[in-house]
Image 1 (cartoon, rainbow, N blue to C red):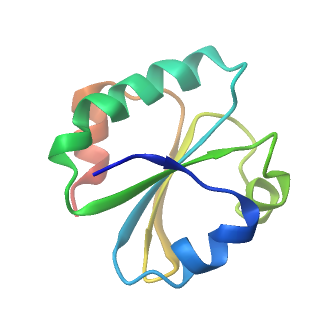
Image 2 (cartoon, rainbow, N blue to C red):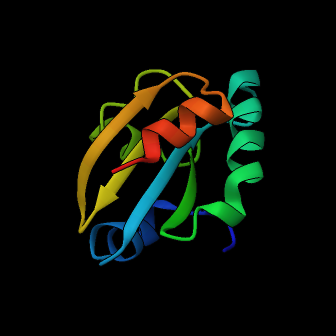
Length: 103
């Protein structure tokens, strides 16, 4: 599975209309904890086969961040069939991320 950046124009089709579970990593290039979180997600990429993973840069996609109430980053959200199942704010260790991703 490849982790991809997603833009506002793709969000409706790729996330809200998706039939599979989606993990969204809301981040920014200047954010240190976001870079650390990205490394943790990248390290689990091969284990996360039940998820499609997208990264959303809040500076490039402010409307998505605003719509989903992203006030701090990193923020992780799990979508299923276009609806938010759960979200967490802040850096997560590998163990914490694995726990967050459990159904």
